[in-house]
Amino acid sequence: MKFKVLSATLVSLGLFATASKAETLRYAHFMPAQSWQQSTMFEAWADAVDKESDGELSVKIFPAQTLGKAPSGYDNAKNGVADIAWTVQGYTAGRFPLSQIMELPGLFKTAEVGSCAFQKLYESGALDEEYKDTHVLFVHTHGPGQLHMGNEPVKALGDLKGLKLRRPTAVIGTLLGELGAEPVGLPAPAIYENLERGVIDGYMLTWESVEAFRLAELTKYHTDFGFYSLAFVTTMNKRKYDALSPKAKAAVDANSGMKWSLIAGKGYDDADAAAIQSLKDSSETFEIPEAEMAEWQAAAARAKDIYLSELDGKGLPGTETYKAVQGYVSECQSELN
Image (cartoon, rainbow, N blue to C red):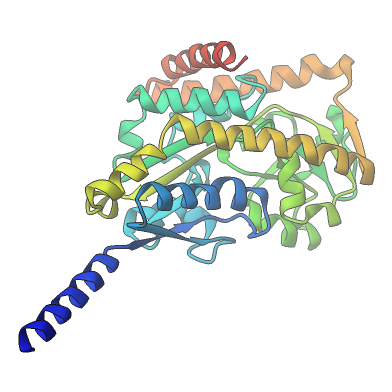
């Protein structure tokens, strides 16, 4: 009888030990919980990893900066505040100089192509030094960002003079400065409050994010600008990744790289397409005048040249990397069409 009781106890303990192998990864991002990113990117990734690890991993998602502010996203993953973080590289100015080449004007027209090119650039090893402190899962871009105004429409280049406009990163700030505006650095979650208080007159953002952050409530005018895109990274704490079991690590690896870069890129393109019509129905949209297009493009070219010259001057392969990205964009356009 004692033997049977002991055996039953050991079996019970064994079962408990097996169950306890399930590990929870904390995944932090700054988008609202109701955003399309929550379901299409974050929850879908969590479900895939849970399934492919046979339950060894579960993922708890922390939206809307509930596990760290947006500008601290990368450091939160590096330092273990979060196990995984999705963030914008340009929120920490100067830290990812080669990655931010993806933000320069005129490189690509869709988020899917931009994401494909960015992932190819990362996989080439050109960015290894920038991400040495974490384990990158995938990188991507959003689609062309637009200019959105609270009370003053921008119909022509002269309308920009002196306007205080939110710029997501310093690279885009240079572009706005070349166009005559006064750039103000803010992460996306801070736009609503600052627009409402009159700290800024307008902001640069994708169509889909205007809706995601409820900014349509304060936005009367849109200018179809489309001269920039943002770079994003989903990255993991290195120690946490290294400590995973072989099966759990394989599940994470299977959900890294180009597959999820393209899911993110296509998600942005689809979300932009859905948001454009809604916003155009509820507010006014203006196109850049054809007669002025050359001036806008010249300002964009100056911003590009300034940034690449700064990188080259610091001994970084700015121009070389830009040319590589152009090549990856061409490859991706052919592969995705």
